[in-house]
Image 1: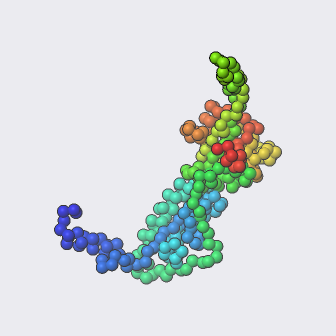
Image 2: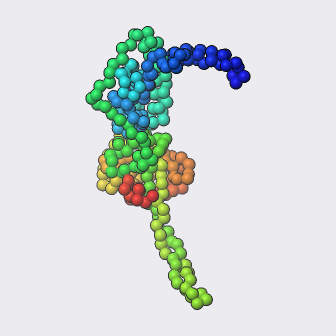
Image 3: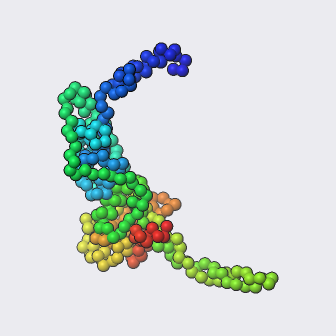
Amino acid sequence: MRNQPKGNRLELQRRKLEAGGQKPETGKPKWPARDCAATVAEGDGGVAPIQWAIASSETETGVTVMKMDTGPIVSQRRTPILPADDSATLHDRLARLGAELLAQTIPDFVAGKIQPEPQSAAGVSHAPKIKKEDGHIDWNLPAGKIWNRLRAFTPWPGAFTFLRGARTARPREAKTETRGRAARAPVPGEILQKPQLLKIWKAEVVEQNGGAACRAEASERRPGEIVSADKHGIVVACGQDALRILELQREGGRRMNAAEFLAGHALKAGERFEGWSQGAALR
């Protein structure tokens, strides 16, 4: 195209503009711009409507074709939020729905068969930007709420917690005399290792899948305390009910199921994952 005469380049640009529904003279759209948003909530939806729909325990979401931002709604399509959904799977399904809806909506809108409806001022919602700290698990929350947040923040920033480090021996410094000046010599001591970050990939609420005995035992534990750890999962007490961790990943390690993790990282009942304020202070 670089070697084409100027007249030919202008003609090609004019044809591209016409094909895109724009006037060649001004470059302005022939029809107002339309937006396809991954939400059916009123308002501008914010920057993370998919994640916050799951985190807020919504059971349904969808896509909306509208005039930009808070303009009139042209069309909508809804879809349930399934228990197996996380933000990645829901994103992909909404992307397909949005493409289908746009293909169906644009011809009818251009033909004047669709009359846009104004958005209601009631029930306006906003989904703020996701921050890394949003993934830090607060074990004081009900297990169901933690489970929803885990799904919402997978794959990024991920749901994570901290396991308090074990106490290990290390040399402790003591003064000795060397050539007339004080020197340091190692003597046994004890330190607390750096807390271990664990990313949780999959879990389930014990109330829905566990027995009454396990729930009763969880109710006697502090939030974040391990109730049991075996090949079936790591059960952790929460503010209400308990969460069974099925897949997790140690910082710097690979993703693995509970049985694989426990084979190399022994955990036992009574150990405790750090809560939000504790983990934040330890980082």
